[in-house]
Amino acid sequence: MQYVYVLRSKKDNKNYVGYTKNLKLRFEQHKKRIGGSYKK
Image (tube, rainbow, N blue to C red; front, side, top):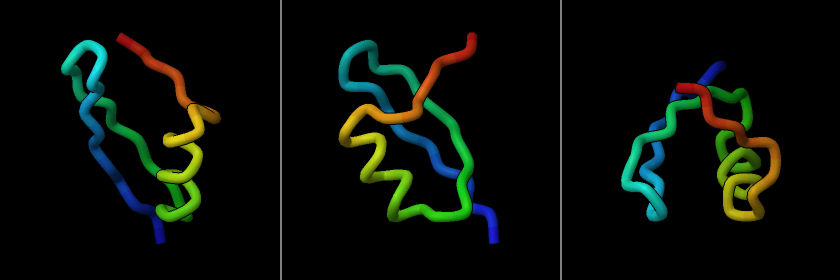
């Protein structure tokens, strides 16, 4: 199953949209700033 998620940046108050098969792992990666990138 794929999950779609929306996070809000505390730095610039913008939304970040992503998707993953492992939601728990992906949130842990976000906390550690692993694997994310922004596209405008």
